Length: 138
Image (cartoon, rainbow, N blue to C red; front, side, top):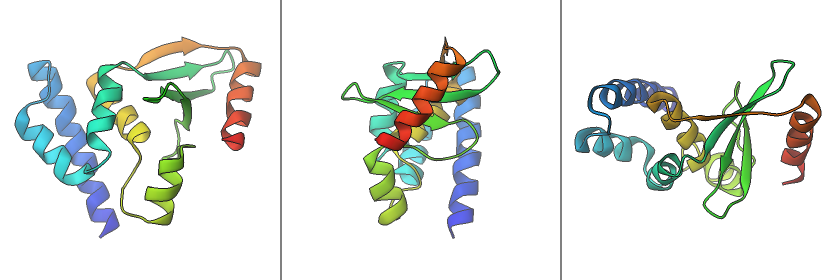
C-alpha cells in the first residue's frame, strides 16, 4: 500500500507543477487532493513555501543539500538524494508512528521544486561539511 500511496503522491506533485505553471497558483481542486494524500504536514509545508523558506545550498565541489528554515527559525538540512530530514517530526511521525509519508520540511522541498520557488545559496565545502555534521547533532 505504501508504494501505491507514494506513486499517487508523485503523480500529484507532477500535477502541482502543471497547475502552478498554468495558473500561477494552486487551485482548490489540487489543494484538496494534496490534503487528501499528505494530510497533516500540508498546511505547514505550504506556509514554508509561501515564506520562501526552502533553499538549495551548493558548494564549489558540486555537492548540494536542501535547507529549510522551519517556522521557529531553526534550519533543517535534508539531502537532495534521499527523503530524510533531521527534524523531530520526521523521526516521530514518519519513522516511529508511520502516520505520515513525510514531514513538512520534505513536503515543502518537493512543492517548492515543482513550483520553481527554491532559493539558491552558495557555501564553501567546509561550510557544507559543517551543515552535514550539524544534522547528526540535532
